[in-house]
Image (cartoon, rainbow, N blue to C red):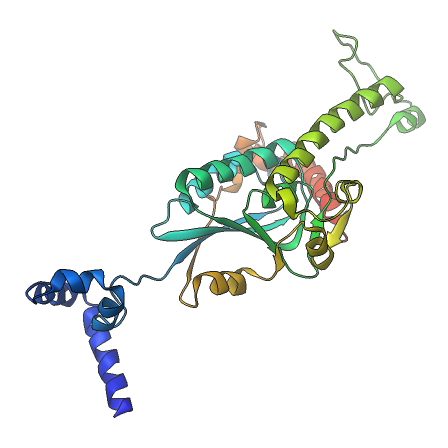
Length: 328
């Protein structure tokens, strides 16, 4: 009997999935005395319709934020608000969306783009009253952690790299190299400090001091953002948490930088049930030609000429540097 009943339920459920049969079923229900009471009773309604009415599977919008943050060159695409604004808007506008999940895999980059993306996410989350949960993959460090702080909760795996709350500037000096090859540097400026930190001139102490002042301003904004978003969740000393150091997910949990260990699927199923559906929203893709054009570089050879190739190579080296800092 149990097997017969199970097969009957499956058959009736299949019939009800048909839009035309669904309408007929509702019209029949309306003719039954006490129809309004039935519609108010969600438990009874679910049984009558085999769970197909008033019991939609919760939808989780998924937005991937992967890569170095900022413009990376004519042929390489970094994370930026311009490139992800449309996807951010779409993920918060999905039908029946219960929460938005940010899947982050970024070693950081531009503090401005980090702030812009995080701010847009927070504005839409507050405006639509939709919770946001972040999931760190390999790394959510520096600007990547800035993005994670846009979420109401942050999760990572035990081996994920988390933190690096600080500011770094790097470059090269070519003074001795141009001397060795007999190259004469010619530089003309209007404004005494226009050529600060020129890599072909000797580094000046006042230039370094000016750079450090800028770094301190950015650092203050970064730490203030983390404190405001993590509030009383932080458990370590400020001197440790905001030292620029980074940790595994396990240690980050102890410091209060994340809320738990887990991956997207398991955590969201635990929060919203086994029937939860994931809807991945991706930014629009650009062709190689448009990438070259959008970089602002217009030469006879198009995006594949020697200039663009050189710029792309330098961008690739810089991108590799960002990941290498965390052993990735």
